[in-house]
Length: 115
Length: 289
Image 1: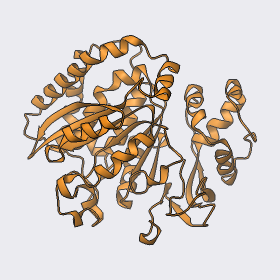
Image 2 (image 1 turned 90 degrees about the vertical axis):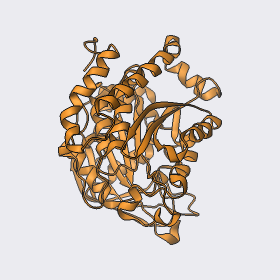
Image 3 (image 1 turned 120 degrees about the horizontal axis):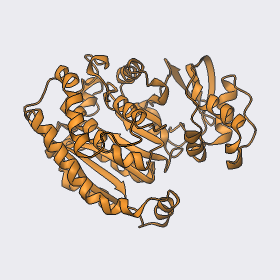
């Protein structure tokens, strides 16, 4: 859901993930939450980000019907909620500007000349 | 169940939870019945500071059995780190993504129309304008002219950020002109009300609640219908507002109106929250967490 917002950038989304350290933390499986949040997810962006963090079992495309499939929901749950980028960068697809991620916190602050 | 001051991280460069933080958390806690009926799925706090407020929101939603994704932003790296530590200490870090950015700048337009609940406790103290951008701890309180410089930058983003059923809680003080803030949001298609008003040390705190007006534009009406919002909820809304205001009064009275130290907050919170809950008729209700 994050994007590059440097002035003048047209295609600053989605940011690409460059992972240095990824952490996996188990979380309660809540299908209801997943069904509600699904329409707000940019699937190709999630799939690409997950792949960059070593999770490559998400289907290429996803539709509402898949939300009845437990196996799919579990993969979606894992990619969305259990895999965390601890150290690395988010990279603007247009300019290549890197936003560092440190301690799990992405730094999307801009320099004065970027605003 | 709200965040504990003892487990909240703050220091020289991060705003210590104070009366304004407590007021906004009390307003959120008073809103739980509405969320029980219509669970929010994506919440955002802008300017999370120590993390006390977003952590309390995460705990409240967990208590209600609502699975939601939460986002918290701050412009101060030390505040973002403090929020992470506060969330971890309360074991709710999994549900909250913390990021460093100016207001919600890194979320638009990707998160356009997605945020169900937005919380903003802005730097609201009237100061010379140049203090607003000084950075560090000043960013936590310096509000420039009328204390409105930062609030006035966020308000225009609300119609873009909020979902069709979205709502926002905003902290303001008397000098910020809360009635004018309400008029601004009403003109932007929102219902505006005072969720809570409280006298604290040297300031009158108001928690404003904005909710996208339902039924005016087609998308909001359609979304409301899709969620099968019971009609009686609309009819019940008025009494609920009154109850919440009574509750605010009772909380303020129990604090003696003198402003209460953060350390006393933990000890007092259970008792204070229990009484208004009972008055809302929630205690012992089936399904309560």
